[in-house]
Image (cartoon, rainbow, N blue to C red; front, top):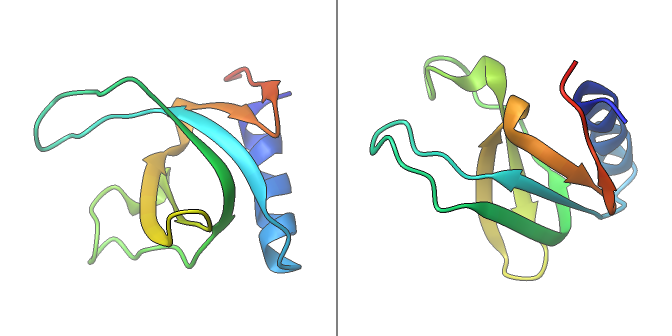
Length: 90
């Protein structure tokens, strides 16, 4: 599955309140570091940030982890897995 097809499915599931799982490669632009792959078992997307709030908002997605009740975000091109299916960036 293509990364952007997976993102569209994530948005559709979030819209109807259904959770999904996904994995992505972590990356902190401020620290220029990664802590490897992050796996989130039950999540929903949340409202997109504006570029005033986050200069990279156009290429990031915000989510809510339903297991830990924590907010998070990730860079769209670093999405690697959706509902157990590996993704490709095309």
